[in-house]
Image 1 (cartoon, rainbow, N blue to C red):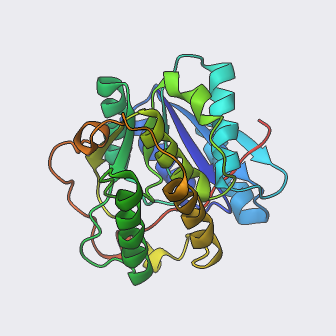
Image 2: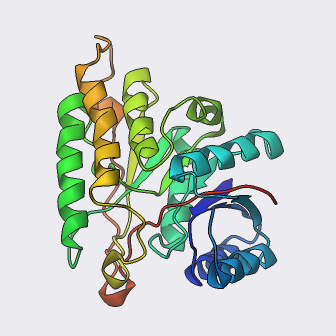
Length: 265
């Protein structure tokens, strides 16, 4: 199992997460893809992650989260063929136990697994409203009840990695494009509940409310007007939800994803 962490302008939260993962799973392989970060603080965070045993890939300039993820997938295919991948954000949003839970679920099912949040408690308004609108639109155009279309915590079986390289989208739109493509091709989407964490009212997120929202909704619109197969799996078959919800985080611990990218070792 490979944990892939796409990052942009990472903070000390990146090596903290890497250290927690290393303590919980000493043999875990981790790849950090830096998407054109600059400045002394991100450089120190990346150095610390490398010192903890991560492979660090870097993009010379910011290319977008979608490009960073494909950079990571391509590297894993070439370096560790046959390994499953869990993608997580490096800004403290995802708990170590949730990342490992998603990894186990990928091994058990051999399918794409989303770590889905409940959006209860003290959640920033733009995150709560944005996810609810996107969730409803996604279900309307696909029939698939994905509870958290914007989650950055996703697991992919090794057999899916080559397919992921063919999905278009360079920035936050890539993750939506992956979900839409999965419903069309019958890849199947598993969902497992994880905690909702927001730090400093989601201040670390690189998601632009207007520009990135337009990018996310564009593939939804294209999907809605395009012809679809009459033999798609049912919603229950395509998007099952596992188990009981994980407890949400509390207080200052809450945090949403940063954007992320990559390039040299």
